[in-house]
Each structure stands twice: as structure tokens, then as C-alpha cells.
Image (cartoon, rainbow, N blue to C red; front, top):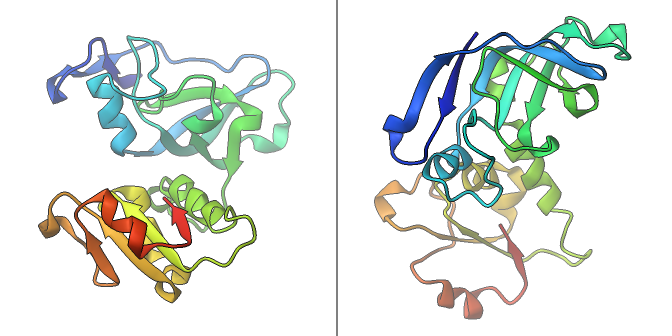
Length: 205
């Protein structure tokens, strides 16, 4: 199978297309045939060797994958065969591994998807899931202000697209204003110190 592999950290040139043996599902695992792969900032951090949850090298980057379960290991319910699923590396023992034509993961780690969802849209669901969880992580206190550093990233853009976001005081920090992709902001922050007076009740992103 084709895959992208990193043998050493560095610039984009360290990303190598390789041919690897196609894996087979072990006991309790499913094999997923890839339809779409998510690409995000964690992949850049892994490539540079500075990711907080850095996997050992050599490694396959990729934190999200959507595909079809095409092989079952022993002990896995037969109903999973042929299902479209989402794989998030957050559910795995080692981050990454999604940049490949096939991937074997524990059956308990996959999220079954409806047939109606486009695979390319589905690979962004982990960010949306995280944003929705943050709305419920404020200790039952009402959210009045939201501060989002790095608003041009995937999580920041999902936050801005949430219907709830437009009902609150929204502040964002970005290195370069020209990268700003939304007009919903209450204020644009250039220094983290500015938020101390602007956000008395904060939900941190």
C-alpha cells in the first residue's frame, strides 16, 4: 500500500511516499480502507519534531481518517464490515498513522458514520466535537467572553462557525491580520496581556 512516512524531522522534504505491506486486522481490530485523510497543524508539528505527543520515528503522520471497514479481526462484530467510519488518532495509543491507504485500529476506537455524510467533510468532525465539548466545560457558569488564540487554525475556524459563537463577546489573537477569515470578532488582540481586562469570565480555546 502507499503511505506517507517520516524518517527524520524537518521541512516538507522529509515527507516521503513509500510502499508498505498492506496490514491485516488482528484480534479486536478492524482494517479501514481510506477514503479521505485530514491534514492539520498536528501534522506540521510532528514533521518538525515538536509535537507534544510526538510518536517515535519512523512514523506515518495523519490524525484523522475516514474510510470503509473492509476487514475484521477475530472477536469483532460482523455488522462493522462495510461501514464508513471515522478514525481519530486521539483515540489511539500512538498519535498519527492515518496517511496510508489502509489502517488497522481497535474496533472500539472507530466512530461509525451515516452514509449521507461526505468523507471529506467527515474528517473535520474531531475539531467540531472538541468545540462542542468546550461549550460545556465552564463549570455551569454562563459564558460571556471567548478568547481564541490562533484563530486561523482548524479549531479556531470551527469555533467561529459555531452558531453559539455569534451570541457572545468574541476576541481573537492572530500573528498577521491579513490571515483573518471572519468578520464576527468583537476585538482583535495582538498581545495575550490584553485579554486580562477584556475577558472577566473566560472560555479558553
